[in-house]
Image 1 (cartoon, rainbow, N blue to C red):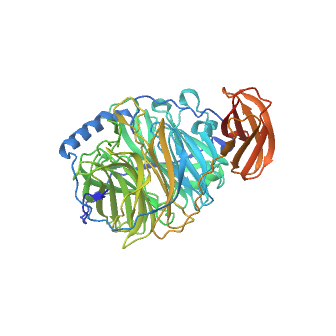
Image 2 (cartoon, helix red, strand yellow):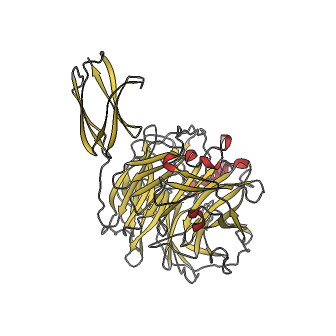
Image 3 (cartoon, one colour):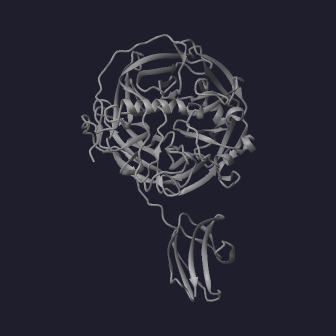
Length: 614
């Protein structure tokens, strides 16, 4: 299949203007609770999802966005696009990959963080999973409700959603944010790990979603870190309001990391009234560091995300740390050469139902030296399809910004929810990995990536192909995610971990993969072992043999169960070695019927296998 990129790029001038002065207040918040994640109370990990799911920023913007997309479809009808004029870079390598969880909320809202010590933390609606990156084996899993149960939000306040997580390589710790409730029930929780082990102890801080006592609630978090601080952005939406009046403002939390890691009073600035020529700037996306964590300055990007077509890019900077005289926030308006616009819904094989692409907000960005790269959803005006907008901003140090854009698209596919991460010095620029969801009339929803070498793009490679179409809601437009995960593996230059969704029977599939450039080091790849290899003979009148593989050595209980899952008897309890083992037992004492052998370790069933006693 030929990859087509729709628009060329060229440099343009910049329009700068003075924004109204943003406001900030310095506050403190006491730690609400601590939790040992691996020992958090187990629950059913249950969720309830309405058959008509809201879009980001609540349902208040749903009608407005639909009108914009209808107008865009008339202006830019679907058709074949031109041949790519900027291809030629080598494709990225898939170094390792595995399913990180099976079913999830609608949409999954998947995000990840990867440590330097072989741990991947994946968060979705509404769970957190910890995996080993080399084998894909599960270390721990909890619902977000169980993880944050110590903060006291129960009953009608117990729902958790929109999780984000980040790994801090300078402190060797994790930071997560989890939202809880909307309207008058709105809160969010910040969680700081006390160690490098995400299954270990965390410090939890509970924030009100209505910090200004103005009947607004907090939605759609985005996160980043600098050397000493953590940054969290989000939108304040008025209770139960229409799209004309629902959005009030976007805000920024500037948090001292050390206080969170130590469990001390959390010291933070809360920035508000962030405007440009009297108009609130919406959906502020923090820009992460490229080859290293940046600081003390933190940059944010925004655009006119509800536009049919627009060329405005807003670059915001917080210039100093909390409590310093230099602490201030500036806003600069820049113009990109290639306009962006709200993307059409995605098509999918095997269904007339479409996939929501939401609006055109910035979804990923990094800074390396004097350059920022960012990505968002967009319409491709050449072929009318949903594409990926890839922007490059230069002049970062001088704030004399030049912005160029490029739209990545294929005439037979639609793309959604991209992310981007710096990978290495490139061909005359900064090289990056761009990952995104893909779908089309002849392909099920899956997950793709490409390599950008600083001037040219590689062909698009599928990281994970879909197995079926997505059909989880009663409405025509199905949820396709709100964002996807991407993070540089700090300890191994040239490697980026990504996470996205794919179509899978009875739900969404979620897939994580380590990607590398053509000269990246080779990671050790292990396929997660099946615990049960063989059970024979079957039917078994006398002796029954069961070969199995253990992920780790230790005591194992072999339990006999019936068709209803009730324990019939304990066959054996014995300490077993890691790796392959063989269990043999005499089944002649059993009455004729169908049975199951359950393999249990550390109180958990690793696998069950059915056999028949004639």
